[in-house]
Length: 293
Image 1 (tube, one colour):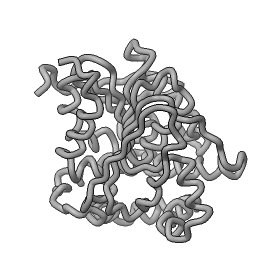
Image 2 (cartoon, one colour):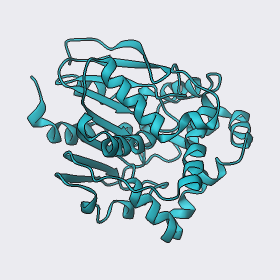
Image 3 (spheres, one colour):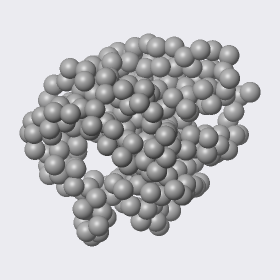
Image 4 (cartoon, one colour):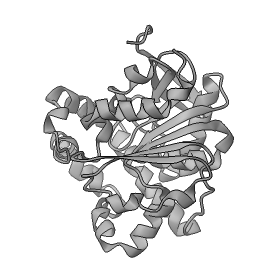
C-alpha cells in the first residue's frame, strides 16, 4: 500500500472549484471518471497507482462535490479539457499521465489531441476515439441504436424528471444491470452513486455534457482531431452494451507513437470496477518504465 493516505482537497481552476482525492507521490496521474459517476469509480485504481505516482481523481465539473455551473454551454469539451490543464498546474506541474473512462475517456482523448505537450501517457477505458465514434454513428445502425440515450438526453428537463422518480432504480440499472459480475456493485457502493447524483444540480449538469456535445456538433459539424503523440493504451471490456467492440478496430492511424489495446472478455462497460485487478495489472505494465519505487 502507498505510504500516504487518501486525502480530499479542492482546486479553483478555469472558473470552477473542483473537488478531488489524491494519494501517493511521484509523477502526476489524473483520473477522469464517466457518467453517472464521480471520483469513487477509481477506488480500486487509486491505491495501486499511488504505489508509484501521485494520483489525483477529481469530481469533474458538475459532479458530486465540484461546482455545477448552470447552462449547457458550461459543459463544452474545450472547457472540460481546460479544467484538466488547470488541475495539472494546480499541482505545480505542466504535464501528467492522463487516464479516463467513459466521458472521462472522451475528455482524455481530446486533451491528448489538444494539449500534446501536457500529456505524458494516455490510458483510456471503454471510450472510443472521437473520430471512430463519429464515423460509426454515421454508418453503423447497430451503434446508433446503442446510443439511443444520447438522443434522449437532448430533451429538456424530461430525463432528469424520470430519473428523479426512482433515483435508486436508475443507478442500480446503470451499474449492476449492465455488469457481468453483479457482485462488483454491492449496495453500499450503489448508495454512494445515489447520493452523488442527488446533489443539487448534479443530474442536470451530468446530462448537459451530452447536450453540449450535440450542440457543438450542430454548430461546427464533425471535428478533426490531431493525432495522439504520446504512448497510448486502450482497455476495453468486451461486453459493453452501449459501445460496440467495432469502435476499437483499425485505430492505428490516430497515433504517431506507440498504441496498445487490451481486451477483457466477459466484462461490461464498467471495466475498472468489474475487473479491477486485471485493469490495474495492464495499467502498471504499460507504465512500468515510469514507476518511481
